[in-house]
Image (cartoon, rainbow, N blue to C red; front, side, top):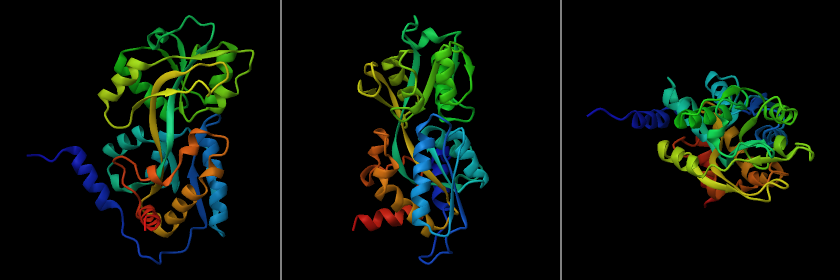
Length: 309
């Protein structure tokens, strides 16, 4: 009987993560963290993490690299262009399934969840996701997690839109100007770009109860139906949608002693890293190891074991 592709992947991931000695090489001169686009929580949380790491790794230049987010970050890790990167779970696992070397990337830990938000002007006649058919809709930046998940969802539902690619901050500005009809954002809440919309331009979030269930059933694992609380944005009520876990990823070849410091920083400085982002405040040791089918880096495993003693 042929071995399932998923089993082959998991075996390769486990085998591809190199063993590390307790004394590894010194910290690198530079540590590059791929973050996200303007107006997204990845950009802000990633910048805060980079600043925290700079204090924990003296002699190392820690760089927060702006990117389009998840899909680009995974690609940059696979290419070896960055050492660390933030990504939602769904494009991460999809990329590992199709990678020639699935053992090249591993997880530092699970951080917090991103929520799909479909934003439309409050005055618009649009009330359902299907109403977006034929309209101008921002899918986030090219190679973002928003683009990946929005494309997967709308393809599953057979909804065809005029899909545009742009950063969340640009999409919010263009929505307020009237040059697009809706914006999709898969990011933490509250999303800076949405929260920054002018008070003179009220918006609504589209309810996605059935769509969330259908996506979760069609792609088991990364998607969980949830409700965005009414307190998230001013004058915007609760909204049913789905959430996706976010991971901090690392090159598997990155020395375990460095990743152990990174892991310790993430989970002991979480309050400072998540400052101003309620959803990111959920970063904690208890859920940090729940990285799905993406294996933990040996340095992260070592730190998690140390705090469970």
